[in-house]
Image (tube, rainbow, N blue to C red; front, side, top):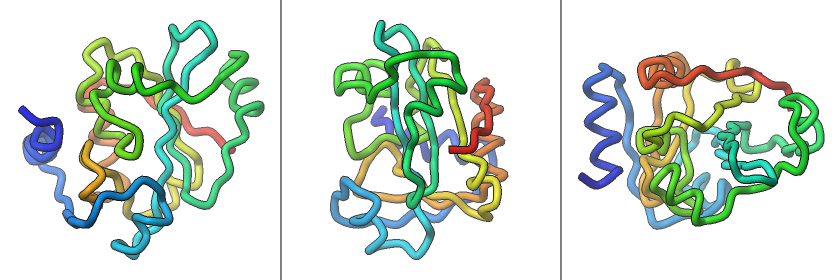
Length: 159
């Protein structure tokens, strides 16, 4: 099954309503903003130097990621963006399509999830369904439900 189809199937199984917006392939928040009025979320897939710990950090589109503060918060050093190999291996996706929904493909459940505290203030959030030619809009509360039902704990951070 294509990972995109898996997203729709799981959302329906979880009774999560969503709006689907189709658009040309986008690789940045700026490009995606042309097709949705919702403020976007950056989905950052990070790893430590040893590449044995992985992190999905969700932040508002206008928030600048402070890697040093994040390192201090999680007690790790030398955090950086995970390369394409690990993105494929852990989330079965590619750069430009990273999203919360990639966690569906993380069989090891070894990705730690962190949410920017500003996301909690939003009514709705947007994510690619593991395909950057579409955007899904869901209620923020349903994002928490999705994480919980998949078995992921998450922590809020102030970036």
